[in-house]
Image (cartoon, rainbow, N blue to C red; front, side):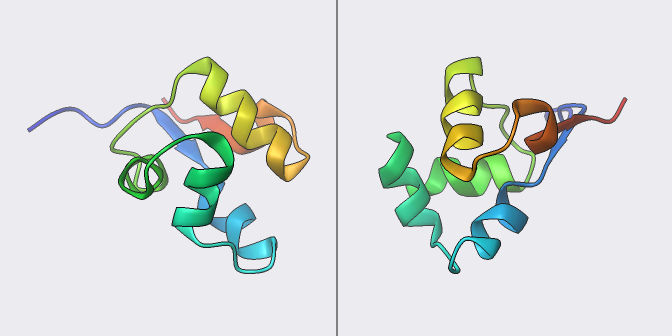
Length: 71
């Protein structure tokens, strides 16, 4: 089993705060599949820096407010 990345995130929380945005709608807005959004939310996948910035800007927060180092 792959080791879980030491990064937690608030993607689901912010998505739900923004009018109950669906995972598919978030994916469409930033150029990802729904499956990739699910993997990010479940901490099974760490997004690229570019993707992290795209998500943060969409929600109007800083990257450090969206992704938290948990080591």
